[in-house]
Figure 1 (cartoon, rainbow, N blue to C red):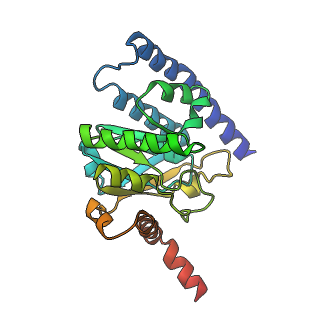
Figure 2 (tube, rainbow, N blue to C red):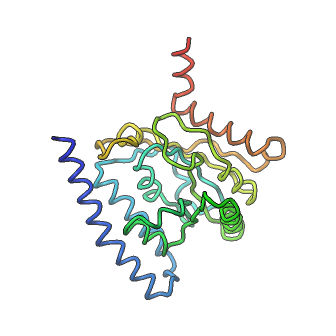
Figure 3 (cartoon, rainbow, N blue to C red):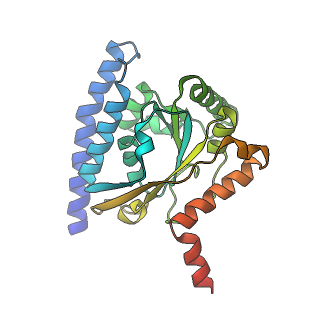
Length: 249
Protein backbone atom coordinates (compact mmCIF):
# COMPACT_ATOMS: atom_id res chain seq x y z
CA UNK A 1 0.00 0.00 0.00
CA UNK A 2 2.87 2.37 0.83
CA UNK A 3 4.43 1.70 -2.57
CA UNK A 4 1.13 2.41 -4.36
CA UNK A 5 0.70 5.68 -2.45
CA UNK A 6 4.26 6.77 -3.24
CA UNK A 7 3.92 5.89 -6.92
CA UNK A 8 0.57 7.69 -7.22
CA UNK A 9 1.88 10.80 -5.46
CA UNK A 10 5.10 11.03 -7.46
CA UNK A 11 3.47 10.44 -10.85
CA UNK A 12 0.61 12.84 -10.13
CA UNK A 13 2.98 15.63 -9.08
CA UNK A 14 5.40 15.00 -11.96
CA UNK A 15 2.79 14.95 -14.71
CA UNK A 16 0.96 17.96 -13.26
CA UNK A 17 4.21 19.93 -13.19
CA UNK A 18 5.06 18.92 -16.78
CA UNK A 19 1.53 19.74 -17.95
CA UNK A 20 1.80 23.25 -16.52
CA UNK A 21 5.45 24.04 -17.21
CA UNK A 22 6.21 22.58 -20.64
CA UNK A 23 3.34 24.26 -22.55
CA UNK A 24 4.79 27.58 -21.37
CA UNK A 25 8.16 26.57 -22.86
CA UNK A 26 6.45 25.62 -26.13
CA UNK A 27 4.60 28.94 -26.16
CA UNK A 28 7.91 30.81 -25.87
CA UNK A 29 9.25 28.72 -28.76
CA UNK A 30 6.29 29.61 -30.94
CA UNK A 31 6.44 33.31 -30.09
CA UNK A 32 10.19 33.47 -30.81
CA UNK A 33 9.91 31.39 -33.99
CA UNK A 34 12.00 28.60 -32.47
CA UNK A 35 14.84 30.98 -31.61
CA UNK A 36 14.96 31.09 -27.85
CA UNK A 37 16.43 34.15 -26.17
CA UNK A 38 20.13 33.77 -25.37
CA UNK A 39 20.59 31.74 -22.20
CA UNK A 40 17.00 30.49 -22.10
CA UNK A 41 17.49 26.76 -22.71
CA UNK A 42 19.88 25.92 -19.90
CA UNK A 43 17.96 27.53 -16.99
CA UNK A 44 14.70 26.01 -18.24
CA UNK A 45 16.13 22.50 -18.59
CA UNK A 46 17.94 22.67 -15.25
CA UNK A 47 14.81 23.93 -13.48
CA UNK A 48 12.79 21.06 -14.95
CA UNK A 49 15.41 18.49 -13.92
CA UNK A 50 15.80 19.82 -10.39
CA UNK A 51 12.04 19.99 -9.87
CA UNK A 52 11.64 16.40 -11.06
CA UNK A 53 14.39 15.31 -8.65
CA UNK A 54 12.64 17.16 -5.80
CA UNK A 55 9.37 15.41 -6.63
CA UNK A 56 11.25 12.10 -6.63
CA UNK A 57 12.83 12.86 -3.24
CA UNK A 58 16.37 12.79 -4.62
CA UNK A 59 19.38 14.81 -3.48
CA UNK A 60 22.63 14.96 -5.44
CA UNK A 61 26.07 14.67 -3.90
CA UNK A 62 28.68 16.07 -6.29
CA UNK A 63 32.30 14.94 -6.15
CA UNK A 64 34.83 16.77 -8.33
CA UNK A 65 32.18 18.18 -10.65
CA UNK A 66 33.46 21.77 -10.80
CA UNK A 67 34.18 21.37 -14.52
CA UNK A 68 30.43 21.22 -15.17
CA UNK A 69 30.26 24.96 -14.49
CA UNK A 70 32.51 25.73 -17.48
CA UNK A 71 31.68 25.87 -21.17
CA UNK A 72 33.95 23.51 -23.08
CA UNK A 73 34.06 21.41 -26.21
CA UNK A 74 33.64 17.86 -24.87
CA UNK A 75 31.57 14.69 -24.85
CA UNK A 76 30.17 13.79 -21.43
CA UNK A 77 29.15 10.14 -21.10
CA UNK A 78 26.99 8.75 -18.29
CA UNK A 79 25.88 5.28 -17.19
CA UNK A 80 22.15 4.76 -17.67
CA UNK A 81 20.23 2.39 -15.38
CA UNK A 82 17.37 4.54 -14.08
CA UNK A 83 14.70 7.04 -15.11
CA UNK A 84 16.41 9.35 -12.62
CA UNK A 85 19.36 9.70 -15.00
CA UNK A 86 17.29 11.91 -17.31
CA UNK A 87 16.41 14.26 -14.45
CA UNK A 88 19.98 14.26 -13.15
CA UNK A 89 21.58 15.15 -16.48
CA UNK A 90 19.00 17.89 -17.00
CA UNK A 91 19.68 19.29 -13.53
CA UNK A 92 23.46 19.29 -14.16
CA UNK A 93 23.34 20.67 -17.72
CA UNK A 94 26.55 22.72 -18.19
CA UNK A 95 26.84 25.96 -20.18
CA UNK A 96 26.47 25.06 -23.84
CA UNK A 97 25.15 21.63 -22.89
CA UNK A 98 23.28 19.62 -25.54
CA UNK A 99 21.69 16.29 -24.51
CA UNK A 100 21.35 13.37 -26.92
CA UNK A 101 17.94 11.66 -26.79
CA UNK A 102 16.24 8.86 -28.66
CA UNK A 103 14.09 10.19 -31.49
CA UNK A 104 11.03 8.31 -30.23
CA UNK A 105 11.04 10.31 -27.01
CA UNK A 106 9.31 13.17 -28.85
CA UNK A 107 6.11 11.08 -28.78
CA UNK A 108 5.95 11.16 -24.96
CA UNK A 109 3.26 13.69 -23.93
CA UNK A 110 4.56 17.06 -22.67
CA UNK A 111 8.18 15.96 -22.14
CA UNK A 112 8.67 14.90 -25.76
CA UNK A 113 6.83 17.96 -27.05
CA UNK A 114 9.18 20.23 -25.13
CA UNK A 115 12.23 18.37 -26.44
CA UNK A 116 10.98 18.78 -30.00
CA UNK A 117 11.15 22.57 -29.62
CA UNK A 118 14.47 22.66 -27.78
CA UNK A 119 18.09 22.30 -28.82
CA UNK A 120 18.53 18.54 -28.33
CA UNK A 121 20.28 16.03 -30.58
CA UNK A 122 17.58 13.53 -31.59
CA UNK A 123 19.13 10.19 -32.55
CA UNK A 124 17.15 7.85 -34.83
CA UNK A 125 18.57 4.46 -33.86
CA UNK A 126 16.40 2.62 -36.38
CA UNK A 127 17.96 4.44 -39.33
CA UNK A 128 21.74 4.19 -39.45
CA UNK A 129 22.20 6.93 -42.07
CA UNK A 130 20.13 9.41 -40.04
CA UNK A 131 21.93 8.42 -36.85
CA UNK A 132 25.35 9.00 -38.43
CA UNK A 133 24.20 12.33 -39.87
CA UNK A 134 22.96 13.44 -36.43
CA UNK A 135 26.28 12.51 -34.84
CA UNK A 136 28.26 14.35 -37.52
CA UNK A 137 26.12 17.48 -37.05
CA UNK A 138 26.59 17.26 -33.27
CA UNK A 139 30.35 16.86 -33.73
CA UNK A 140 30.44 19.98 -35.89
CA UNK A 141 28.63 21.91 -33.15
CA UNK A 142 31.17 20.70 -30.59
CA UNK A 143 34.03 21.97 -32.77
CA UNK A 144 32.47 25.23 -33.93
CA UNK A 145 30.54 26.35 -30.85
CA UNK A 146 32.35 24.73 -27.90
CA UNK A 147 29.29 22.79 -26.81
CA UNK A 148 29.11 19.85 -24.43
CA UNK A 149 27.20 16.88 -25.81
CA UNK A 150 25.82 14.54 -23.14
CA UNK A 151 25.17 10.93 -24.14
CA UNK A 152 24.58 7.49 -22.58
CA UNK A 153 26.93 5.02 -24.34
CA UNK A 154 24.62 2.11 -23.49
CA UNK A 155 21.93 3.66 -25.66
CA UNK A 156 19.08 2.78 -23.30
CA UNK A 157 18.45 1.97 -19.65
CA UNK A 158 19.93 -1.23 -18.26
CA UNK A 159 18.29 -3.40 -15.62
CA UNK A 160 21.31 -3.68 -13.29
CA UNK A 161 24.04 -1.56 -11.76
CA UNK A 162 26.52 -3.17 -14.16
CA UNK A 163 26.73 -1.07 -17.38
CA UNK A 164 25.70 -2.91 -20.53
CA UNK A 165 28.15 -3.09 -23.47
CA UNK A 166 28.70 0.41 -24.87
CA UNK A 167 27.63 1.38 -28.36
CA UNK A 168 29.96 3.51 -30.48
CA UNK A 169 27.93 6.73 -30.77
CA UNK A 170 29.72 8.59 -27.97
CA UNK A 171 33.09 7.37 -29.23
CA UNK A 172 32.32 8.52 -32.78
CA UNK A 173 31.29 11.94 -31.48
CA UNK A 174 34.68 12.36 -29.81
CA UNK A 175 36.49 10.98 -32.85
CA UNK A 176 34.67 13.26 -35.31
CA UNK A 177 34.98 16.39 -33.17
CA UNK A 178 38.43 15.89 -31.66
CA UNK A 179 36.94 16.65 -28.22
CA UNK A 180 37.79 14.71 -25.07
CA UNK A 181 35.41 12.22 -23.46
CA UNK A 182 34.56 13.06 -19.85
CA UNK A 183 33.06 10.05 -18.04
CA UNK A 184 30.38 11.02 -15.52
CA UNK A 185 29.38 8.34 -13.02
CA UNK A 186 25.85 8.20 -11.61
CA UNK A 187 26.12 6.12 -8.43
CA UNK A 188 22.96 5.11 -6.58
CA UNK A 189 20.19 5.89 -9.06
CA UNK A 190 19.86 2.26 -10.15
CA UNK A 191 19.11 1.22 -6.57
CA UNK A 192 16.66 4.05 -5.80
CA UNK A 193 14.66 3.75 -9.01
CA UNK A 194 15.43 0.54 -10.91
CA UNK A 195 14.01 -0.03 -14.35
CA UNK A 196 11.25 -2.43 -13.22
CA UNK A 197 10.00 -0.21 -10.35
CA UNK A 198 7.13 2.27 -10.88
CA UNK A 199 8.19 4.70 -8.15
CA UNK A 200 11.36 6.27 -6.77
CA UNK A 201 12.69 5.61 -3.28
CA UNK A 202 13.92 8.91 -1.78
CA UNK A 203 17.64 9.11 -1.17
CA UNK A 204 20.99 10.50 -2.31
CA UNK A 205 22.69 9.90 -5.66
CA UNK A 206 26.43 10.48 -5.92
CA UNK A 207 27.89 12.07 -9.04
CA UNK A 208 31.56 11.80 -9.99
CA UNK A 209 33.67 12.93 -12.95
CA UNK A 210 36.50 10.61 -13.98
CA UNK A 211 39.71 11.51 -15.78
CA UNK A 212 39.13 12.52 -19.41
CA UNK A 213 39.97 10.42 -22.44
CA UNK A 214 41.77 12.68 -24.90
CA UNK A 215 41.43 12.54 -28.67
CA UNK A 216 45.02 11.27 -28.98
CA UNK A 217 43.85 7.82 -27.92
CA UNK A 218 42.24 7.30 -31.34
CA UNK A 219 45.68 7.30 -32.93
CA UNK A 220 46.50 3.97 -31.29
CA UNK A 221 43.14 2.36 -30.51
CA UNK A 222 39.98 1.57 -32.47
CA UNK A 223 36.57 2.97 -31.51
CA UNK A 224 35.55 -0.48 -30.24
CA UNK A 225 38.63 -0.70 -28.02
CA UNK A 226 37.95 2.77 -26.60
CA UNK A 227 34.31 1.82 -25.90
CA UNK A 228 35.33 -1.37 -24.10
CA UNK A 229 37.99 0.44 -22.04
CA UNK A 230 35.50 3.18 -21.14
CA UNK A 231 32.96 0.63 -19.93
CA UNK A 232 35.60 -1.05 -17.78
CA UNK A 233 36.38 2.30 -16.15
CA UNK A 234 32.73 2.64 -15.18
CA UNK A 235 32.59 -0.95 -13.90
CA UNK A 236 35.69 -0.45 -11.78
CA UNK A 237 34.48 2.88 -10.35
CA UNK A 238 31.08 1.39 -9.49
CA UNK A 239 32.75 -1.63 -7.89
CA UNK A 240 31.05 -4.06 -10.26
CA UNK A 241 34.15 -5.61 -11.81
CA UNK A 242 35.85 -6.21 -8.44
CA UNK A 243 32.66 -7.59 -6.94
CA UNK A 244 32.29 -10.13 -9.74
CA UNK A 245 35.94 -11.17 -9.47
CA UNK A 246 35.58 -11.66 -5.69
CA UNK A 247 32.37 -13.65 -6.17
CA UNK A 248 33.98 -15.87 -8.77
CA UNK A 249 36.95 -16.51 -6.47
